[in-house]
Length: 253
Image 1: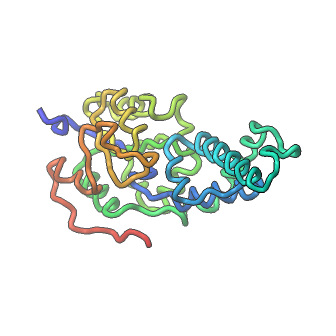
Image 2 (image 1 turned 135 degrees about the horizontal axis):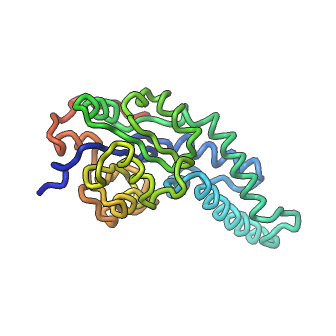
Image 3 (image 1 turned 60 degrees about the vertical axis):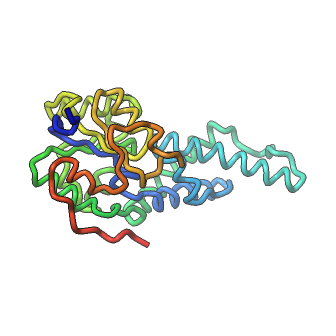
């Protein structure tokens, strides 16, 4: 039996699935690094760090920046570590606070819906399927972003990174969604763009759709073996027995 025939609700990841948030995240990461007099990373590198929440994002950024600075110092004949450096754990604590400050300014203007997302969510919502959002992004940033993108209206349940003890790839967020929607895990479809999402779905006992256009640490998502693999968001519609969306929102430049 096709697993999709049992689906009674759908949960979505946010960054890399519904929203291209890389510009805003990169701006916040690089501003935080710059404020600490560390090398800036750039979007191509930052997208490979997205997916495990802000704490891990900044850990990855700091690890890279310290290594990069050590390499630059060595090339200039200087010791890799500056005697005036503050300890790494203190650096990370400050960086994490700086990230929140800069991301609060950049989140909305640096985030864009991927093509066909709004139309597809609207069609699924109109069919009467309850929709949920499950993201590792810090909870305070989630609702304002959904409102700014005009998609908050589609979601019955929203789970942010601070709403659970264990973030994805742990199954807890998806099991919580299933509970809130009064569904069994097998009746909940999870749609995401990274191995974290697919691992969470498998651990929770949910069917999974992987989207190839997202971030996924620079790896092919097929390696994570989702139940279904789509190149475009609106492929969800025919897979669930709905007409394929004809409207395509233009992706930002």
